[in-house]
Length: 133
Image (cartoon, rainbow, N blue to C red; front, side, top):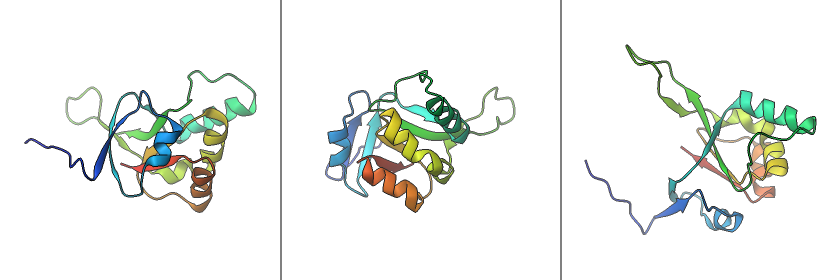
């Protein structure tokens, strides 16, 4: 099977050089073809990050102009050593969204499901983006 993107309705995005200005140019419903390094984490990681920030500790990585993918593991099947990973429900990260956007430099998030009103307001306030996987 061969697939070619419709360049009239989709846009290629290099995550390694992503800027807030580029994020601001994205349109709701637009298909984005992501390429490059993406951070991964879910609610437990977000809690640890929030706790570190509250204590004034230095984060182990730089989140500036980065995208985080809300991902969770899936159990291995049969003889697989490691199972696949897939998007996890973003609403579990809603309570951390303001902290992540205000204090880390993160500019976009990828997950599944809708975001709650408080998270949506934080995303708007920080001119960030939420992408549905």
